[in-house]
Length: 311
Ligand code: KPL
Image (cartoon, rainbow, N blue to C red):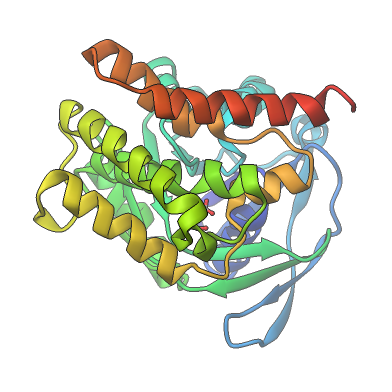
């Protein structure tokens, strides 16, 4: 029997997952508002593939008569994950395996703590963006890693990684997902807030106007991650290894508009709480300096408030 995958949050990664899994599994793509069932995927090679997806709203779920989900993927933004789970909690068994696809490190520990069933976390470098209510563009292929924070559900992660890989969404089950989530968070913290504040593409951080501030963020982040027991990338020496990784990502994504800049431009709440929040909390816990991170957080908060309050 085909496993049913519920995908809660029809953003770019949610829709890419739905398109990939549809031929291999039973998929339900669930959002707050109705989306067309006829959906288009543009592949990294530019091929356009139309596919019918089972799109549903949260309100339709109760009456939809779907089989119990084998996996529930939560693909919302970080700060919306808990509310999204709450919105479907009455129609799912509390033993259902969840897969959290959020950036940062906010929703993952909280939901791992509160959910009785297995909670897997995924981190991905797949690149995708939406092209309207009926389309997603798969901009670049990437790697996905899956694991759970307590390393208690290895076989569940392996089963999911196998299905995803078969579906062309290359994935690997790992026992160090906490390390990987923090490593991604570190890179995001050095790039996202600054580009969002200044409205620039990632590559512009190399310029004299911003590079000093990037370096100050890296200094603080490297100390915090060391205190958290997070290994520096590529088995390097802490601060130098983080510096090398951040600048490598800046160069590799030079023409990208980072996700936080896209949020600001669309007047949406940003993921600052999930990215800067855990770093600041950890610094305070370990008695480490974090004034550079706090200043960035306050500037982003003020920027957000300027447009969210005008809504
Ligand atoms: O992951 C990213 C994001 O945009 O959130 C980076 C690495 C900053 C690339 O744009």
